[in-house]
Amino acid sequence: MIRTRRSATAAAALALGAVTTAVLGFAAPASAHVTVNPKEATQGGYGRIAFRVPNESDTASTTKLEVVLPENAPVGSVSTMPVPGWTVAVEKRKVDPPIDVHGSQITEAVSKLTWTATGDAAVKPGQFQEFPVSLGPLPQVDKMVFKTLQTYSDGNVSRWIEEPTPGGEEPDNPAPVLALTPASASASAAPVAAAAPAADDDDDDDEGEGNGAALGLGIAGLVAGLGGLVLGGLAFARNRREPVAKA
Image (cartoon, rainbow, N blue to C red; front, side, top):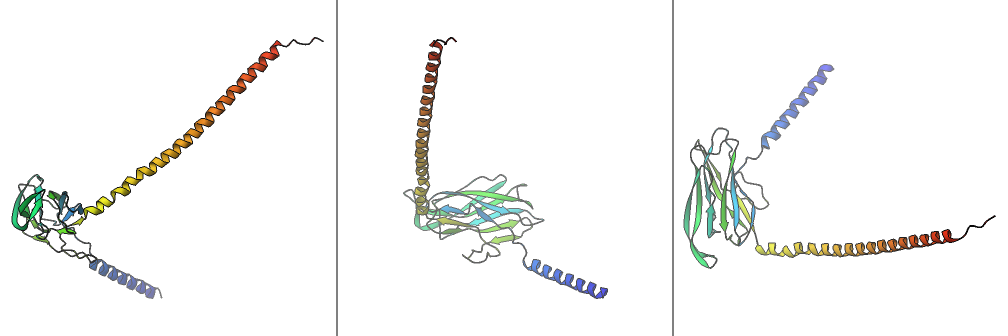
């Protein structure tokens, strides 16, 4: 009987272990990938974004990053911030129709940015690096997809080029995506924010009326107290002037 119970317990443990292994095996954690930070900006404005590059390899370092700007959303002005130990190469392409930037017609737009590590500046295992970029005016589209290649010191290349599908699962190799919102949406939110001080003014008026009433009551109490003190003094003086009756 005892042996039967032990056998049943062992069988249950083995079954639980098998299920756990299967679940964990099929539900492996998603790997880190290149992203853009912040993830949202406003159409028509200028934005400062940074490509955040984590190193996924346990043995190799990231030595090069190639970012392709979307052809369907050209940007008239693109500038990079220096990253210590890295050089950047800028490639351009012709655009037609030209891009209007503050009244000037721009016929060329940046098509690709390539950062290359020099010396010991490569992104080592367990580290990440950000590559800042300023760009604008941002196009009138709902998003910009930056297809990216990440090259390692051992020759392996991670291709972050798959465009996510709205409402769908994240692809295995997603490209960095910058969401763009219409400028009118930001402007419409301004009156709502401006309405808050008006409510505060009403509160201040109510508070002022309450303070005025309290001050009036305080003055009235003070006058009444002074009146009582005067009357008490007069009564005391009168009592002292009256003669004391003899027996």
